Image (cartoon, rainbow, N blue to C red; front, side):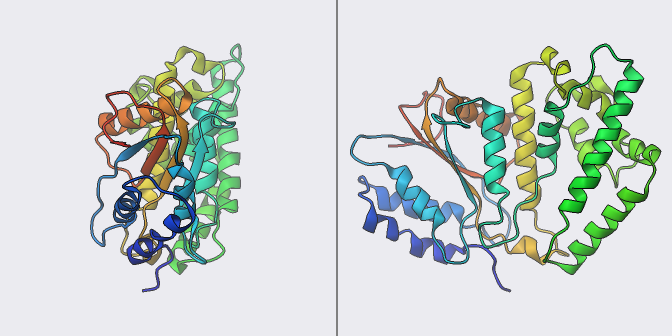
Length: 322
């Protein structure tokens, strides 16, 4: 079977090249060997991936070598994103950081079919919607339904792949035709959760644990609480955890191996996230804290290897590399 991403053997070979162009600190080569092992995805099952914190020194910058290490390969590269917590957009807030992470990992730039996201973009889109606070509740909800339906139709049409598995393409085309043909009442039923096949990603929001979704009864009520203005009554920490949880769920689904989709089995390298200039008091440190909280609170593994660089981390950080 032809592999469309960097294999473990290629990764081990590539780890030698950064040493030739960058002065690595003591243990640098061993660290790259560790990364090669962590990034290589097992043929069966998946491993629990850590968050590694590199303490910066004045003599060398290991993050520069890491960027080159992940960016190598004439055809296939490790899917990765690089963020700087001290420069825009990373210097903004956690939603801005996640938005840039999503943009970079969504690029078709790694020699393989690009990663698809469904839950996170929906949550982020809802946060940019405005509903009139003084409008009648039924009219406000009807307007949100229309926007959701227009958004779904546009995104599904844009997401039709130009290549890949015949089964995957056929299912995408069929789903697009159904969504374009059904009347608004059927779409409303899908959004409400009464049509599980068409509304699986909507139902996910009602099953996850952040922002107490059961208080909203239906997804539409939950979606209203995420819109601008209405969101002011929610805890910002819960909103950020929801966004991060949705993002990690999309990665889990992208790396789920399904027998009827050969492309799923070609993802042989885990994606990586590099975050530079992280400190316990800035947005990078906040992202690190949220990742630890979401992984602990949900009890779910995710296929994202995270390497952050900054000053001395807080003692509660579980993984530190000097």
